Image (cartoon, rainbow, N blue to C red):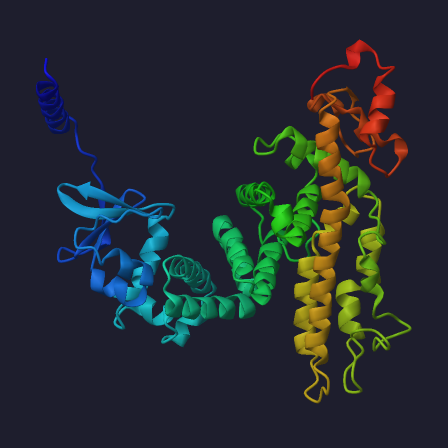
Length: 470
């Protein structure tokens, strides 16, 4: 067969194949598929048919994309596609739900109550916490997509609205459960935009959200077993977020502490946790029973005390009109400090460390109630800022001094694959339930992490039967 005939046959075969094989079918978005739209956009298997002039008006990215009459320009984010003979683009790495929120900003109408609420034209609806959570989700989606597609005015507006909700309604956001994916996305967005205030507010909301389930929390919102299990599952998913310890050590330290406070039964058999995760948690439980108060920097809890009601010569020294010792004592006083130091029940100290966000919330409440109208030095604001800084520093210390060192040591130790039965210092632990872990985690009644050199010295005389992999 000649080359010309071969090419003709291949072309004919391609035509037959395209005619025989079924074309992929996509669902049309029920809201944003306009018959008079000028461009098809495929997002997560959903077809949107919108108007190029509307999107290009705000977005430089879409403006450049739609300049080509044939819609044939390919980029990393936009892939030209042919859908039933009509050209369009597939937008990758974006969810249809998020893109729908983005389009809502272009096609929303004042007659739509949700649009009025989102645009701050219906203040009465703002009182609903559920609506605030929904709005938070929408603002975050719009801010992220506007940033990605170079719509600076829209991004700036959504960012500002996001800050308003995070700053004034973090308690409501924590109670009514921002979805886990939105929690972490909001924190990562704040980090990317270098907005430390937004990052702090989002972190506070996440920490408070998970503090509600602690058995030591004075404000218990979840009673049903299914609800508690769901919270625990979300907590572990946050813990497993890739490189969270590097991205936000304060949140990682809190999550580590919160998981420990649930007791080993809650995480030893959890399938989301790896072998190294469980070993790290067991090691942390050993090191934090009882709590090493000085290492965790918890001396700040005694800033206001019986001998220094006004915090003289401290960062939170009160003016002549203010005295917040009673408020401080109710939240961080002797009773709370005694629980941190307690050794019975076994997890008492860890559990109370995990509810610092709840104590912070209670402190903020009593501060507001007792705020003096004649305050000369913004005492309440300074005290709350001081408490926020100290709480996050405590969790950072937890991440730095216990999580990082233990994590790196575990990785080194596991390379040797020498094990003996697990240590018995963990209260209530049944060794057969997980088998064996590296010898170095026995700690020999010491609080220092055993280094690989120590492991080598030990295993040189170990018997062959001790060789196994946990």
